[in-house]
Image (cartoon, rainbow, N blue to C red; front, side, top):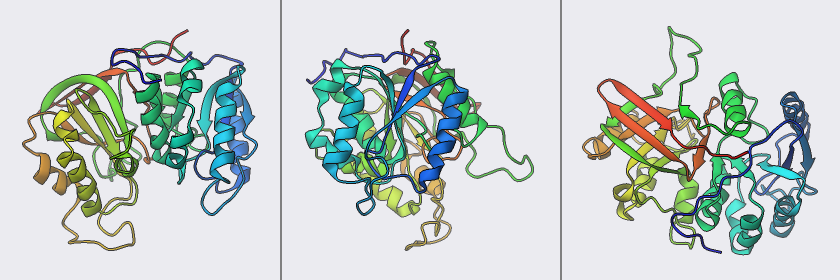
Length: 331
């Protein structure tokens, strides 16, 4: 059921007693015992949970077979008692489910779906096919990683107001701040549009498929993890050549954790060719806002970005502001 351009569907906000369905559409948890921390933190929020039957299965780096992972995912959408679907983690394998994913089932049972990394391969297709707002944010094993992450997890899911102006996490050490700064201006400008995006590797994986990302008039956000700057350059160049950068109203590049030259422990080019340098050389005169460093995705401290919701991005000599102007959930 392909949605019309104007149709945006808001899932219901969580409340005390809501049930979170925990599944593994990609990879299984590193340690099964880590799930106990997830349960403890959900309980602090007054939430209950159900766990997919195959969540700890293992088939290589996948949480079991494609059929079993898909079955767990569909069962959570079918279950009327489940209010939110929360993947245990990313990893690998989500895109393998797309050709058999029941988009009609999802459209008929709108619920919150949140995740990042490999889960990008579900967030973008589901939002574009059904109009349902999906949430780029922490997974079941990461929403309690820091007070900042936990704050935005709760704020995005358990109230119906717009998220408003996005703040930055408190620096861990004011004398030795982490690089990059959260709000580096690559190209100045103002933009307003629906949010879309996620992990850059997954966005590239979707290119040329029926679920290729649509950036027309939207604020595109991307990030990645343990990729060399020249690898990020390749992926961004692919989006550029495909018209995705030109069509976007504005662009947010996340922190891209562990993406300094050599961080991947694979090949690298000159140590002075950083992500920041690459972005400024490619996009410094883009003619629309592009910012770098915001804490999203693979960053330990991450805020939530609801896909399909309108936001306003401003970048100039005074700094950067990102304001999410529309609600992402309803009562």
